[in-house]
Length: 212
Image 1: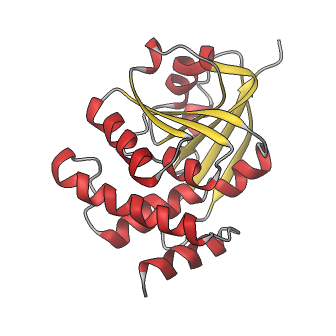
Image 2: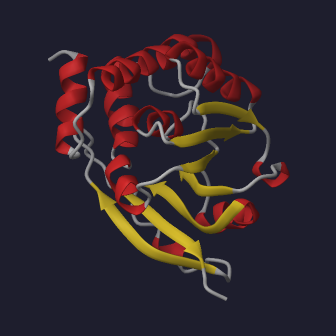
Image 3: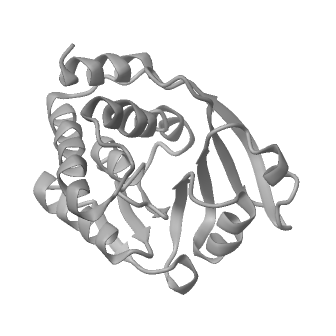
């Protein structure tokens, strides 16, 4: 089966109808990951099919829930974005969201900048910094297998705009981490995900600042 078909069928199972342009950009992004990976070691995955399922479809699984929770314009900070997951995928599918992919490793932030240039995504940028040193305000703050939930929330709480949301992509439901949250964090939904072609547990932990 062609990559195009795998991508479209996988997206359809996630309730998403990809346009030709979105499909083309996603495949181009996957190709860039594999190309730059030879030099920059962006991901442990080396196989085009695995990149498709474990990275692209995995990140696409957040789009439906994101559309439900935040249908309008926003600034999104993707913390510890690495090769730009899920931030780049969000930027491709949601052109109304300005995505900043943050990573402490300069070459990974540079890669995201290259992706933005090559794919023509004005709503995407790579940022080289540590989350603790960053300034700004974001309606959405995301991460994917980045750090423990307490560290993620504590490190980014001052960057979350009033009324904003965190979405943390995790594997298994992180029960231990959920019992160790710092005060002031309201986890309002732990959402199980099913990723086509991926035989592994996935979930999103949705949170906001607790009402004081």
